[in-house]
Length: 390
Image 1 (cartoon, rainbow, N blue to C red):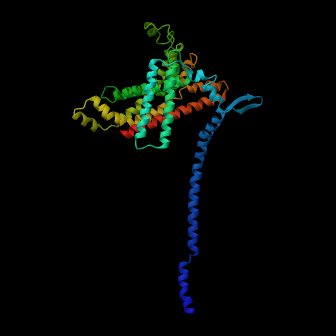
Image 2 (cartoon, rainbow, N blue to C red):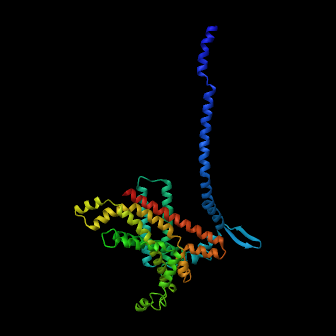
Image 3 (spheres, helix red, strand yellow):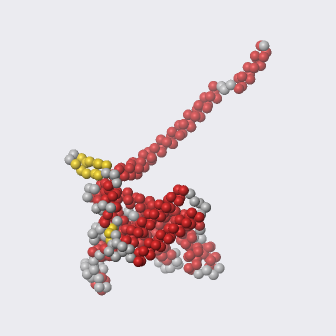
């Protein structure tokens, strides 16, 4: 019995955990917990900054858009009003300013609206027939199609004879017309300066000068240039028979003046990015195409355009988000006038805020956020589908 007990003792000591092994395991767990805690501690300041500068203001402004804010003796008072501020914009006293004056569509307007609806239906049918159909994707495309259809209907009715566009439609005009002209102008200048022309390096610098001027400075510059009575171009206006014409007193003339200033300011931004994209194209591809007998147009369409497409899609998205916030040019150049003809959504929100209607201003800002989000998501989905098909 004694021998048997002695033979069992080494087996028990080999299988039972000793104190050093348990201590090492606890130390590893403590070390892993400390590393995890250290990562959380280091990232916590950045999270707090984001919450303080982005998330909390969004929540507060959302609450303000659903409330009535007014100053009272000794402070201010906030009363919850539900969707009253939004109803005021859509069907209330601010409807004509926000949405505009609606008129019966013209035959051309009906044609444009019909084309938009047909294109949206074709896009939905193509998505349903594709192999990437999902409930979330279908719902998002239905919402985007409904919003785009309503936007097209609003454009058709406010731009028809007897109608008047509101700040929402005016902002769309600034964004879509401005970005189209800016992109074509920037691409044209980029293509021009990539050619082996004398002085191309000098003009690359000259084309960037508008980016170095503040928007307020550009607004005052164009305010002087559009003055046909005593501006620097007064002799030219007189020679063209426009000596008595006032850009800022005509609604469309004032809008064109604002768009020209915006195009002059932002076309250099698109130019420099597209120039970098064009110069990154492999020279061997172009030389091989020339050897195969391709002309300049074929090289541009089949080599240059596909090469700059990813950069162009991102560039247009960035510029679109920025263009919706236009405020300096219409504020300084025309003060939103004549009437509210050149007033953008951001300027509308600013004017409402200056009138101490903080709830109404927040509602306009959130309407702008909704429009930008829907249009941005629709654009991203459209570009992604085109790139995937390509």
